[in-house]
Image (cartoon, rainbow, N blue to C red):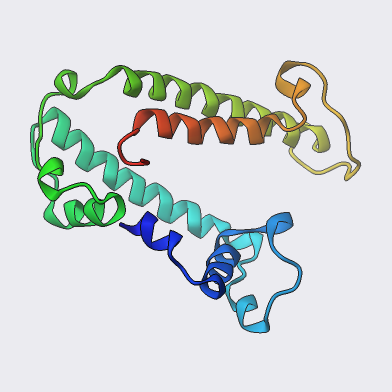
Length: 177
């Protein structure tokens, strides 16, 4: 339901929504002053990651309890899933064992996700090491070109992020239809 709601936003509200989800180079240069209130400096992003880790940890806990211990998801979570996906509430109330629920696309999605996450981590680590010394202190702001590995692609960390989203799509084909 939420995804179809976003598709029906009026043009003026769509620009506001796009402004909220974009950062850096992808943001429009010309924006009304009231939209500048929603800008978050890069140094405050640790709040985003802290909340994300707690929220995703909670969802993982509920998922594991559902799959391993055959417990039903909480009603509030079923309501949120219904709102986001449009799937009937009854579809979310069927717990079962892991192997009864596992499909080939979930296995492939999981493997692709893990591989892409490792690729992204490795790429970002190499990029960070380019400008720092062994103690982690920045020694140069000069732009350098990496060679080898996945740096045959101009931005392997972006490719890895794209592959992470593809993995999510492979893992959950019904939700994203």
